[in-house]
Length: 413
Ligand SMILES: Nc1ncnc2c1ncn2[C@@H]1O[C@H](COP(=O)(O)OP(=O)(O)OP(=O)(O)O)[C@@H](O)[C@H]1O
Ligand SMILES: [Mg+2]
Image (cartoon, rainbow, N blue to C red):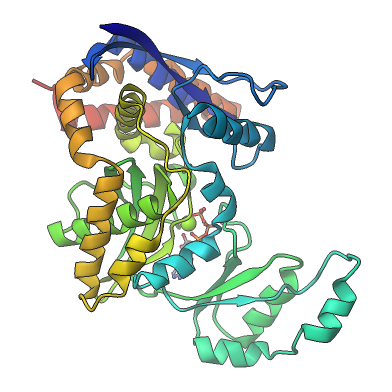
């Protein structure tokens, strides 16, 4: 029987709390599993930033990446490691780099999802470049903002086509708002998107591999209260639609870890923001939902490292389009996309693997989330974000919400 240690790399930026929890629980799990004729132990290590030879071997089996959407040296290291060393990374870095929010709207419209009507505008202003004036003089057509506003119908949202943490998002109620927001948009390329208002639910569905968590989301609340603590607030069919939608999006784009925001109006879920690969993982925003994220992250990374699951380097969209082009109903198509997603995420094998090799995770996590290490991780994160006089108060708040999660889960048998 061959033996190996599967090494999971953590590619981090300013993250503080979740790596502490991930590393502690991975050590506590003390895995030594037999899988496919191998005896496998597990270790994790934080990935450092340094010069590299393109042919330098990589010691990791899996990298959980939280950095490369903005730090290009690490992104290029990850790309070369996938190409030359068969590294498995979540998320697919080429997809992350090239599929903007705008592309995600177009792709999901093509699959028939009820994305609200969306337009794109050329930018208001430009950086000068050699060919700019000639190109604009020859090809840029004059247009009337008023006409576009009337065609789309008020209210709608103006937002940067690449997304990005709520920056530059404006609700537009009339022609004057539209003109003012466009004038202020500068060189940003903007989408205009019909508002799903009023809506009765705003849900953020987080996907990690085939695992899904639906969170009631309140965008108007302060950051620490946006993830509400409701459980079982949706009907089985609503949950199923959100899950199928998120699985579809994530498998289509090769995003193992992503969140999908959807709004429900008149019984229909409209996805409005779902290119969030690498979503917020901080205890200061997730609090009550944070233990779910840590456990889901451990399960999926351990599964990928143990099974040496192959990375989908290319995206292979045709099977989705083939379903889109049938005459099935929208709900039937969504189920068919989700079935494809479950194949790609190996959901059945994953669940079997977790039942067999990780049955003690729940019990360990239940104990860990009441430990001094957990409380200290919260304190460290809160200290990095909050003013001095609020540190103890907010440490206590997030801690108490995690203890509420423990009470509601109950001690695993
Ligand atoms: N079509 C829409 N209908 C209703 N509300 C919308 C719509 N688009 C955006 N919003 C509102 O604007 C907020 C920000 O928009 P969006 O989520 O698309 O941008 P973002 O910059 O990606 O934000 P995030 O910080 O969530 O990543 C949403 O949380 C929602 O409250
Ligand atoms: Mg959003």
